[in-house]
Length: 314
Length: 252
Image (cartoon, rainbow over the protein chains, first blue to last red):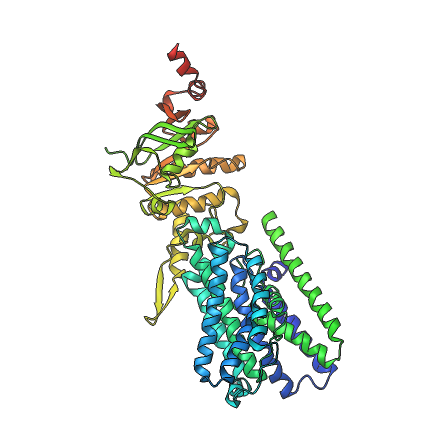
């Protein structure tokens, strides 16, 4: 029994905990199990999960991406400005995604070619892209968007469209990680970069894949967030990077690299969304919510550390 | 018979330091050639030339009679030269099979379209391979993280056998291992040779060297000073050559 428990993937625990939280919430408050609350949570989760999936890819190669929150804001503002100035939606979306791709390529270049630690590169990015978001918006909320902008995120096709977007991203990245050679090399590199290089694998290319995915998905999240809010604020998506990293790690990704799954990142995102939803419904002071979230992140990283140590010890 | 590897008069300097001053080596398919020497005698430098890590200043290397001018370890691998490192060789979070096939995974396609790594073939081949080298590793071990040092080396050796290496370089393979595990590594080296691989085995421990090697080459100050069949020599003789005692004797 104990060995069975140990063999269960970490997702199982997180899912059980989340479901328990759901049951508790539906007993504690009549407002939890309502259609509007659930579809609202699904929308919120979807955007958070898309960011978390991208960040998880950088964690798998033993990297990190701290810039995603700022990239969401920067790309969101960029997208909104283009829409406000009358650019066709698909074109604006395409340009925004290209911008995200460029951000990721720049990060990968600085990390893989210039040899600057990922932590420093993306910490700089966190500041740079928040600054660019402020510059691009003049420090003001960008509004007055054409009504078609919000059609996608507010729309529902049986389930909220945003949920389908997350599902599509999830399936695509899961396929990449689990079934392709590139995916396997992401894990290999996070596990032992030197050994991976010695097997003739181009680790710079792998670094590129991870960071481009992370930034492009952040750009996509920016577009979706603007669609959901129908405005873009330069201060939006604040601290998304922390939630995304926490979601990935709660879902079994190791900050030491070599481990992490799409399902885990999604489950982690669901947990964090549930927690903030619970805080709202039970009218917990939002400041306390921040404290609790921070403590949960610390706890999860501690558990990750413990597991790594036990593994290398045995 | 053409030797699988011939190294002649290899020279290499790092700044003012002459690391190799005319190293020679001849390795035949199916033999274990031990290279011994004191620290700084040039063993590792020589091996790194064969592995493609360093490029010589002068001298020549021939692989099965063909000129060998390597610019990178990757090129060495492509030519059939594998190195078994004592560490840094495996990706811990990957399965044994994934490690053996790392960088050379077989790929199939869903509906002739989407490519995917053929894990079924990898698992099957890995199980057969581990049986072939009579390894005690459970093939179903999920990742290599929990394998012992010797088992990890068995995986690296299985990789060399599977990809039909011509030459395998084992650089101090037992340095970090427990006694029992050293025995396994010696068996693995013999196993490789019995598959027709030319094995170059670098080590310190002369008892072990005499047990594993068919022939022994002694290096001293960047040159090959003595080559002998393992059966025709003793530890004392080897130590004389390793310490340069026999050279000074000759000079006198």
